[in-house]
Amino acid sequence: MELPVFYAQDAAPGIYTMDEPTSKYCVQVLRKSKGDRVLLADGRGMRYKAVITDDHRKRCVLEAGAGALQAAPATQLRIAIAFTKNAARMEWFLEKAAEIGVQEIVPLVTLRTEKEKLKTERLENILVSAMLQSRQWYLPRLAAPTPLESLMAATEQRFIAHCLPDRKQHLLDVMKPGENTLLLIGPEGDFAPQEIELALQYGFVPVSLGDTRLRTETAGMVGCTLMAAVNRKA
Image (cartoon, rainbow, N blue to C red; front, side):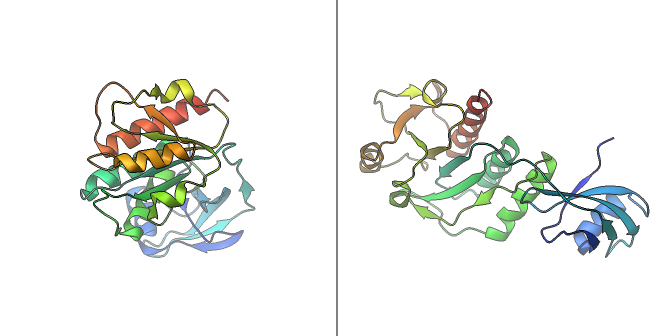
């Protein structure tokens, strides 16, 4: 049986005390008690095996052993996506992107972006939960809202998914496995034509994600899935 994993940003060998919400989940929901073993993840690749020494429901105490560094992903997958007004949809996207294995999500500021102010703490908690759910050891990075122009100097292989009827290849057909990748997803209403032209001037490759028109968060999820699928070939 797999040991449950808990996020412990400041974990280290020795005594570790869980915060109250985590303690309640560990002791009351999972029914863990003194002597039970769990895993701690710091979100930076370190994994610690730990034993519960005090199963207090508000301050569960553990004894952590020596940590083991888990291998980091060989390639970095980034997605820059314009957040929409509907917070629930973008929270759903963040959860799925983290579970799929994207390493960085960049809230993209475009001419048509509807939402630039984000509830960062809530979004970070969603990423932590998704990391634990999918049993990963590296917490995906949530960048600060970033203007489109600031990404033009990116050095990885670069793609822009847009809806204009220009000639585009499917992402599956042009993305190379084993290379760091950045994918741009526009807002509802798509990128403005001048933004698409700017990206093309800087070497972004225009791509399609399929034959249907997708909502922003759906396009983001499909893009993450396709990038992860191609990268498995590396």
